[in-house]
Image (cartoon, rainbow, N blue to C red; front, side, top):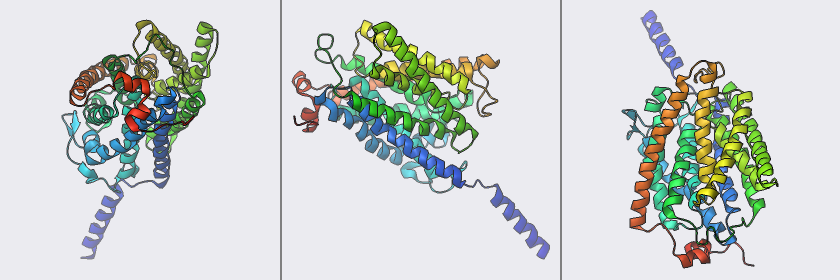
Length: 423
């Protein structure tokens, strides 16, 4: 009997040893990273808020802060389950995690499942808030609230599942998106462009100068975004190890390089370097490095940053020539930057740096570039079709745009009954 009990005990011990166990160091880092990513949404509120006119600053803040609450509730109820539940054909998650049922302290990788869920939530929050930069100063708040709820459910959650969830069809294909170039910035950018075109130009656009009311506020927001982005990218390693260190460094290098190239381009083109241009460039670099951060070398991140600063600056100039009103350059920075970064993963990625990745074009594997382009095409088309449908639906249900009189008075007073400044 004793030998049998010994064998059973050994078997139980082996089974217990085989179960994944959360690592305290990884857990601590991911809690910090989650908090850093959360900080990015208030940072975005400041970044966007400083660029609008003073009569619209609170309404612009509200876009970001309301997303913090609304998307959190959506994520708990069903969003996380749709994005990361058991796959159905690689297209969408099931009902496994509704109301976070089944999401507790069990290990997912080397961290508790709850921590993974919370980290991913912060991405889901900021993505629809990014879109608000396109239609700032003219969309009804009721329309915004309904739009982002539907958009998060029908665009963000499925695309996150395709790209990041176990069994997602883009993940199975071998598409790489380290921290959200396609899932976050490309989807938000495409939707932002469509929103700008569908909602239409602000009253006086092309005739009046829309001067940012508080550039120091925008600069403060950019600083918070840069700081929080270390959690966004380095946290996407999901552990406190070598890949997190790589992503941390590449993130910083790309931001600095893009800020420099945008500033030099602006200095050459307009004869004056501006602080608004500098911070726009650093955000463009952060966007472009996001899909590549854990797959490329610091040297490659320098190149990605330099290119993204120039390309995104060009995209913003093109807006002036095409006369569409992307108020805060959500498409020019996030859409174009996300597109560029996702493609450059296919050029610079090195499997030697991260075994979970793959070699790109410069390392003998041109097929990766093709996969990245296919993902951008499919995700872009899907996002565009769904976004256009949602805009038509919301417009019919509650109306998208404030009246001309309300727009001239400002959204702070007409939508929220408040004023940011009393004198």
